[in-house]
Length: 150
Image (tube, rainbow, N blue to C red):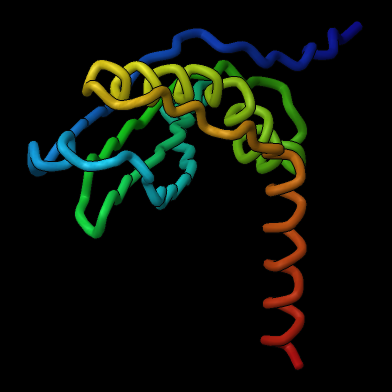
């Protein structure tokens, strides 16, 4: 009688992998605050051992005000996930959407804390639908592959 292994998926650790906050010049504090934000978000996954993956979510926010850089915040939030017994075709979704969904609230909080401690108004990143983003990326990859074969 053989026992079938139950799939395992668990967050074992969450941590701030990297963070940076920069205010290039104090003159930004003497001007009316009407910022333009440039936000870049990315994720990455790396196999740590046969059953663990490190998934990281990185955001870089540059706020410009009155033609100059007010601040730059760069945060990478990471987690160690136990992933075992999961079907191989489900792994990209788990690493590309499920895990980033778990990490995002922590990333959002870290960004807001840095910005407010830097003496700027609160900055709450808009929630992201990582499931929809993952599906859109898969669709683009399929279209690119189809164009390459044509």
